Image (cartoon, helix red, strand yellow):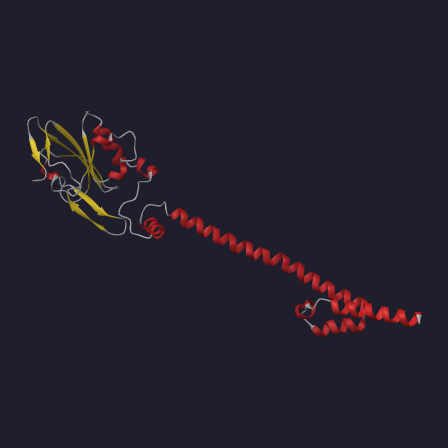
Length: 241
């Protein structure tokens, strides 16, 4: 009875061990015949240990590979998001496209990037020229160059645009510094209406009625010219009838 009970217990342990052996060794091992040969040539206990070792090694490999691949995917995705966020603050067509995607509408104007504006030679020249005499009006086709700067007197800043013009005339004595796009004849005044992707240039013909217009300097690399105009004392120039 004791011997029979011991045999049954041993058989039960072996059977339970066999049932609990992971099946991954069959699926992952490259050769089933090799597994069968190992099972026949060794004791049942050693065969079970071999299967466990194969399964364990395969699990360790997958534990290293899968997190690495997942981490690489997440890192690449995060990098792409950062790149497109940076594009939103880039001037030009790429930045305009990303900003319009974010807002879901077309942008007519975009606030100036201060750092880029500070590097503009034409902008610095216009400010220096306007500050030479008090009460000089700064009329500009590039309003975004100046609106953000606290050193510029907003009360003396005007848009070079006949559509945005509020005053109907200019009385002397007056001095005006004009920032225009460098188009047409030297004394022609031009402004741009649109965004980086679509728009067109217009003649500011209402401001071309100002007398004594003189071009002070051209900036071909920026496509800008800076002019000066004066209205004599006692004179009144009608800009818009």
